[in-house]
Image 1 (cartoon, rainbow, N blue to C red):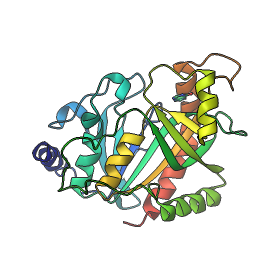
Image 2 (image 1 turned 90 degrees about the vertical axis):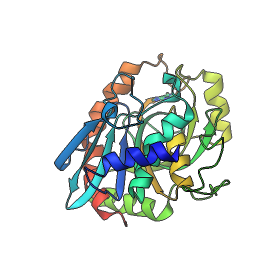
Image 3 (image 1 turned 30 degrees about the vertical axis):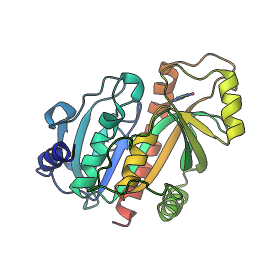
Image 4 (image 1 turned 180 degrees about the horizontal axis):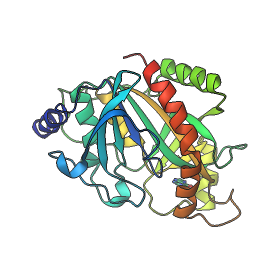
Length: 269
Ligand code: HPA
């Protein structure tokens, strides 16, 4: 496993050695153009799986934001697509081996907490893993991290503080919440959403948690921003659709892009 990760990192090293890696989620793939960008598709990188979800591009770009070298992954891999947990975290582990110190993730989510509305941007403060798996299962990759990694402060408090400061400076409202990850691909039932709310979830989605666990295992600091694309099932009065999710994502993309462009050069790496 580490051999194929090394090979992938060696391939990407030809594009640069970014200290910040960014994973952009559903409908959010276009929000972060870089300066002097060089891009490859997932299919070009040895060992990388290929994404299949509509609205997901499957490319990796390395370039600059205000002279800071950044890697951007446009499109991600979901468990519901049929990938194994190992495949899902392969890219993030590659970025860790490449030397990334900070991982920034974006995703689309359904809003559970009272007061959330479609279009809201929410900084993830913590997560609840209801995926039914942990991507670290199996022999530990000792070169990456420990067998039993701590998960007390997964979403780095210092990075969150910086994100709030930057958002405030731009006049962008940024809330905070707990993200619960489900396997998907079916959306939740109203009874499930009621249960998730009782568990302490503010947001629900089908991604992010595997990558975050793998990043923390490898000692990479994590910041995650969720775009609420819809009210969760039963809170919304109408049935949910993927088109709605993509549409709201597109509408908020400009604002999220503005936030990321200002924020990323300010991250401590
Ligand atoms: N549920 C799960 N995943 C999602 C949702 C949702 O309501 N919206 C966007 N991704």
